[in-house]
Amino acid sequence: MSRWRDVTGGKSGEDYAARFAALARAGRDVHGEARLCAALVPPGARVLDAGCGTGRVMIRLAELGYDCVGVDLDASMLAVARREAPGLPWFQADLAEFDPAGLGIAGDFDLVVAAGNVLPLLAADTEAAVVRRLTTALGPGGLLVAGFGLDEAHLPVPSGITLPEYDGHCAAAGLTLVDRFATWDAEPYDGGGYAVSVHRR
Image 1 (cartoon, one colour):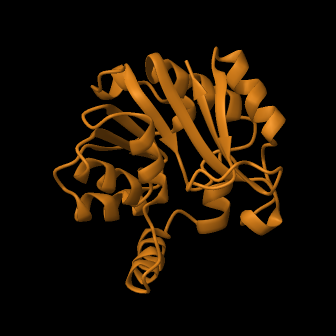
Image 2 (cartoon, rainbow, N blue to C red; image 1 turned 90 degrees about the vertical axis):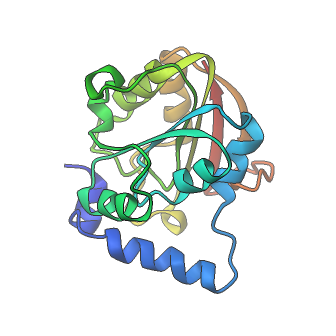
């Protein structure tokens, strides 16, 4: 069972969406992830939102002209995504077993984004498999962008993965680190408790 399900019980879609809606109403910027992705690949690029949740990032990218696909295991989160953007392709799948062809999806994505602490909240010991699966979904030169917390202040549960472990999984999958930030606003990484890593296939 994933750490995400341990925390939420798989029934948090509406609460999660409501929290971000409240932030947006309060004037907070809730599109940092999409903005960074848009700075990395041009409009029209194919983007896989891995662990897409309620679709906040992917819906924004689709509005900006990207060709997007969303995948998540949590049915409650996907229910919100499908309601908010019924015309976009949403798929329920375990990232540790993710196979685009098996879902009828073309591979060769230009960018795969894993936002919202996807990596630390996976089922224990599946992190390397997920990185391999996401790498396989990338086309040559494609980018894997993952942002996640590294300490208690940035995570709802103890971290399941360290930054060196994540880099090791990426290297084993044939990825090369090209950039690392402290936030989705592309502030330089300072060794703190949150990192956004950009790896290239």
